[in-house]
Length: 86
Image (cartoon, rainbow, N blue to C red; front, side):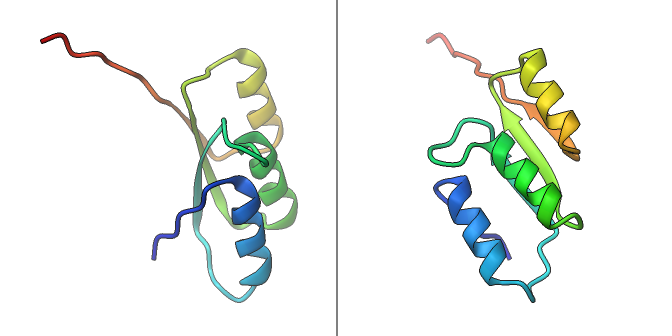
């Protein structure tokens, strides 16, 4: 199953309520309202270590990457934006 959420707080709530459900992977963006992807990744890794995390972002600064590595992110992916000229 695939579930979607509007922000990281919804993901935290879902994981906390559905303790018997096996969640394999959370894919999140860095930039989200209320609970951002870095904070969400830290929370998951501190509270639910079996859940893998993939964090995507247009932002690829060393600070963001360092924060994610320090909080044991499983993978990161840089989003790119390509414009098409017509």
